[in-house]
Amino acid sequence: MIVTEVRAIVTGAAQGLGRHFALSLVQEGARVAAGDLNGAGLRTLKAEAEREGHSGQLSVAIVDVASEASVAAFVEQAASELEGLNVLINNAGILRDGLLVSRDDGAVRKLPLLQWSQVVDVDLTGQFLMAREAAARMVASGSRGVIVNISSLARRGNLGQSNYAAAKAGLDACTRTWALELAGHGIRVGGVAPGVIDTPILAGISTSALESLIQSIPLGRLGTPEEVWQTVRYILRCEFFTGRTVEVDGGASFG
Image 1 (cartoon, helix red, strand yellow):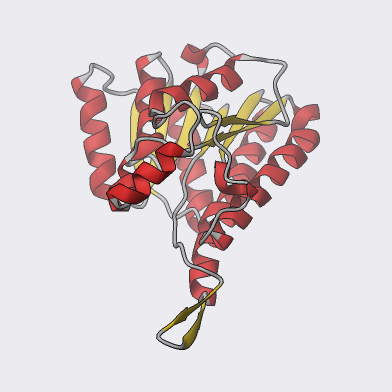
Image 2 (cartoon, helix red, strand yellow; image 1 turned 180 degrees about the vertical axis):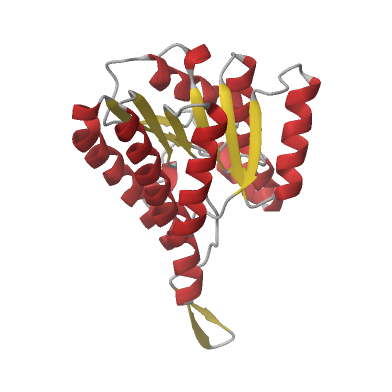
């Protein structure tokens, strides 16, 4: 797939990896519909694209990926504005970390169901809804396409992340399943599982915790959004790639 022919949706595009994906795509000539719940972040994203001379290549819209109606409306709007759709970068996700059970001052605390459900609703069900609607649009139009699911190294399991690990492991299973189901329609499906990447999400981590994370990485540093983008770009371009999730983690392992 030639990037200049790309008509792409990027979710979770207001900051972090999604923002980098959206800007990288328009810089290479693609047309992009960027979705997120963070309206302020989307506005600054659009302004940055325009400052770089890419006015008209990027549109933004509020979307709640956990809402079936919101996703359906967003995909319909995006396909209309882009005059087609052949790429989905399924990136939206949240964290709500917490131990399954813990003891605090003699009291046993349990991970609340709401905390579990919030992450699964966005990081797994939301990804399903986006993939379903985007794939349906591609199939209906007869367009070949690519879906890239953004997973995580935590898919192997990670302390305090039952909800996140379960969602990302489930997403990996969906990546393989959708690749098998959609191949006959000319749609490839791949995944990227980043390790610890230098994005705003790290702002909430203590210095000592961050140092510990870095020590667990054989290459001895954080990854960059550009390094994750290069992997996404490879999946977009390699016509023989489907059904696999690639780890971009500096050799790290949480398992």
